[in-house]
Every structure is written in C-alpha cells, then in structure tokens.
Length: 91
Image 1 (cartoon, rainbow, N blue to C red):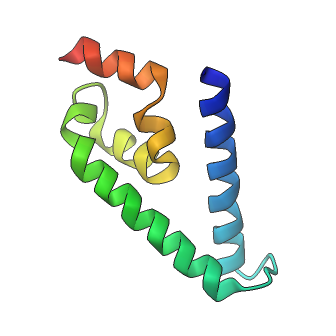
Image 2: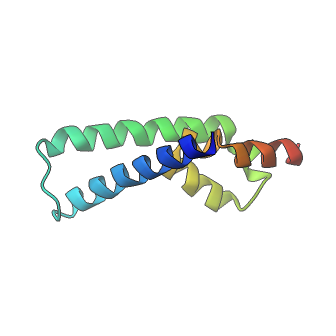
C-alpha cells in the first residue's frame, strides 16, 4: 500500500512541477489554459480537504508543514498509512 501512495505522490509532484514550469514559460504544453484550469480545480479540492481534516493534521505536526503537504499531495498525504497512524495516536 505504501508503494501506491509513493507513486501517487510522485505523479502529483510531477504534475505540480509541470504546472509551475508552464507558468514560468519553461515548458510548452499543448493546451496551457486547460492545464491552468485543472491546476486551479485541484488546488480548490485540496483546500476542501484541508478544511475537512486540518484540525486532525494540526495535532500531529507543524500546522504550516501539514498545510503545505495537503496542498501539494492532497489525499496521498491525508490517507497515507504513516499519516493515519500518527493521527490515530494523536487522538
């Protein structure tokens, strides 16, 4: 299961890297406007995730770090086995 979450995190990290490089004009993408809208939608979804589980995640570590990880990885951070174990121990 850890491998699935690791692969998910790597794919998500690659997506955000392409978005940032595209915004900086360093990478050409076929449809940059669609990529920007997709990135905005994913960012909003991650904000909703933070709103739902932010209080629990604040208990296991630095709130700013937890926020950044949720914004970057989303569900791959929230549902990761290590994170869930830490949340359960903090409760």
